[in-house]
Length: 94
Image (tube, rainbow, N blue to C red; front, top):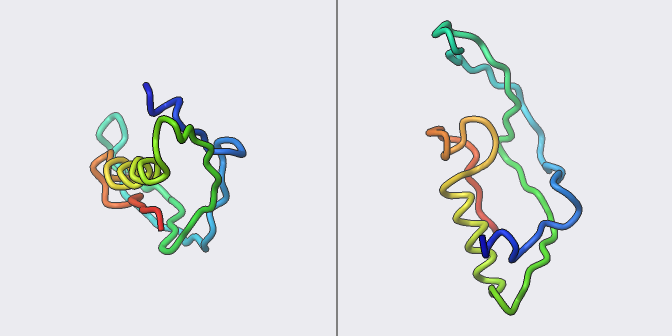
């Protein structure tokens, strides 16, 4: 709970992905167990830029960066990310 109120991404919840997507075809199993083809955008090389406001009396800039890096390692973003047992979606702050 303390981390939730300690920083905010400025500009809303949506950020632009910088990179060129390509279409990927995946086989998924739907609720009744039948296989289905899913088409998903994949960004082999991508980046985003965003601004963060944080309370420096609670967490340092290094701690905030570590929070984001841990999220990229343990959770990720997008379909078939590490949090969901996948191999995509990991990221790191550079």
